[in-house]
Image 1 (cartoon, rainbow, N blue to C red):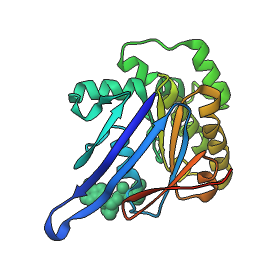
Image 2: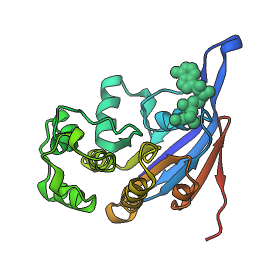
Image 3: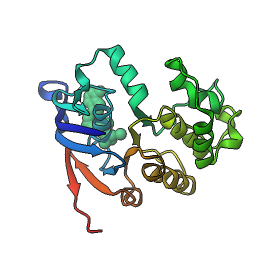
Length: 225
Ligand code: ADP
Ligand code: MG
């Protein structure tokens, strides 16, 4: 698995309203990578994550997954590609309030008319500590539990890569710490790449490769390990 983003730029607006949200960002993501991207509010973090995951298209630049240019896919093919190969975790959890935890987790499979692998579902929910909460509706779960359900949903289709946009931003520091610990174990335990955006330097330092983004410019931080 190899994801290659080359000089991705995103420009919003024109003339006096022109905003360069992302300026020629290049990044390669390989199997089992754990990458963090840290930057202040408004620096282009979400823009970058949306481009890398095909949720949005760039003004310029290219993105390939195993050599395949995903921006050239039709909307329908791209949606299917995203459901099967990419997991996404939002700051606001984005669970469907009328569905139980289990139904939320398996939703991406149902959209592809697939049944869950019960052994894998159990492995995931055990790992995330939510096996005893699967019949609950989201409102009956704590914030940390809701985010762990969202993590299971992001992993259920066995994607190549999971992108998380400030996954602990809505949690208190204790449950945020628990969520990050579980999330951070995913590359090694489940063999998926993980890209986490955060304002929190402790979260950023858990990653094997660290990037910063300032005013739309992405750079890798060299860490001596
Ligand atoms: P971050 O996630 O780091 O807080 P964003 O990627 O959301 O930052 O935003 C980067 C910049 O792009 C900001 O200046 C923001 O105001 C601008 N921006 C984001 N989305 C839009 C949009 N849809 N239209 C215009 N400007 C936008
Ligand atoms: Mg953001």
